[in-house]
Amino acid sequence: MRDDLKAALRSLRQSPTFTAVALTVLTLGIGSGTAVFSVVDAVVLRALSFDEHDRLAVVLEHDPTGKSVFGSGHTTPQTYQDWRRMQESFDGLAAVSNSSFQLKNENGEPAAVRGISVTWEFLPMLRVAPILGRNLAPEDEIDGRHRVVLLSYGFWQRRFGGAPDVVGKTIDLSEASYEIIGVMPRVFQYPVAAERPSEVYTPMRARNEDKVRGGSRNFNLIVIGRLKNGVSLDQAGEQMNRVAEALDREHPKWSPGRRARVITLQEHLVGKVRSWMLMLLGAVTLAS
Image (cartoon, rainbow, N blue to C red):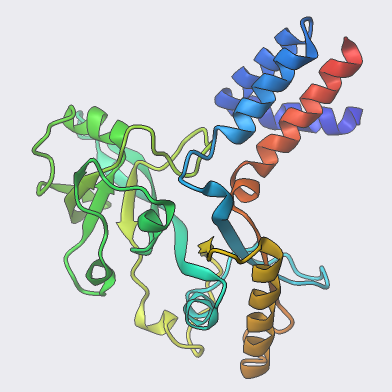
């Protein structure tokens, strides 16, 4: 356990947010165990404030033999389209992919902007809506259409001073012009429990070659779904695994032997934080 704790602390040192919480946990170690647990509970549970977050799940592609870790649970645009078409367990599936942009700051110098590309279903699935403007729409994903972007609340405040007329203005990201269509709520951030959450949200546009199985295989998508009423996590996992098996038979050379598994969104987003906090809690308990 000592080696695990050292590794956890090394990781925590790279994240000021998590480190602050860790120090709080250790400080509270001299007090009651209840107080320590309340901090751990807050980190793990308050991170997901989405409506009925227990119904939100992530579908991960994996190799059950353990021989390949390629993709780390991510899937391809082609497989995502098949999952969306063939699944029966979710109200719908959305895809998320990390992205980054360059933006000139006030001094004209390039600055990195953190972002994610999402399918239009992403925010409705989380039951989150912009406080200004509109959400993404299916037509925003059409290749060749003018580019649009949603801003995080913090980025809106820093870059535009919270100007209420920001919707309709344009912003240059990586030398491409994007129309601002909305601003996200102050309390919304994704990924949750992240030291550096996304600042901009752009629609995911699949290239033509990524729409067919003969195209490139880019394992760059995380797939999120909201379970239908009456469907359990285990039932969804079994059904999605049958879908993966059917796709394996249909496209044996695409990603042979790979299957699907379903976990909660909470486990996907804060599972690592949970492990760190529980190890710290264990260390505090042993020291007290």
